[in-house]
Figure 1: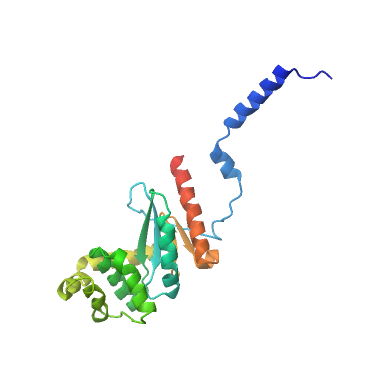
Figure 2: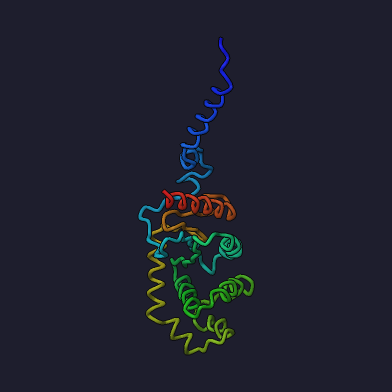
Length: 222
C-alpha cells in the first residue's frame, strides 16, 4: 500500500476545513437536543400577540400585587432583567380574575401614569406583604401616592379615568389570550408562556425565558 505524500495530506486537510466551514452554526445548533421542551417547560400561545415594541424582544411578567409568589419573584425578575441585552424590553401586565385584582390593576396603571414604577412597584408589594395592608379601595391606596407628592384630586382623577379603565380591560383581554392560569407567569415576545408549575421553580422560569430569548434572536437572524 503506497503512502500518501505530504502534499496530499495537506490538500486533504484543506478540503476538510473548507467542508467544515460550509456547515452553518445554526444547523449544528438545530441538530443538538434542547434542554427545554415545548409543552413541558413552556407553552406556545395559540394566537401570538403583537408586542408593539418594534424589533425588540418583549418579556412580560403577568403578576398580581396580592400574590405571595409574585412578591418573591419580583426582585429576582428585576435583577435578571437588568442583565439582559438592549434588544430585550421588560414589561409587566396585571392578572385580573376577581374584584380585588381589578382594583390592583387600576393601582398599577395609575403608578405608570405618574411615572412612579421605579419607586412604587416594590413599595406596593411591601405594603401588602410586610405591612399586611389590603389596598382594597382608593382610600387605602391614596396614602402611597401622597408620600410621593400626588394630590388626592389628581390621584382620584387618574385612578378613575377612561384611560386607566381601558388599560385594565386590555390587560384582562391580554391575559386571557395568553391563557394565564396563575401568577407569576412570564410571556416571551407574545409567543411563549412560562409558569413555575411547568419549570419547577422561579429560577428555572428565567432560565427557560433566557432560552426562548435566544431562540427569538436566532429566528430574527434567519
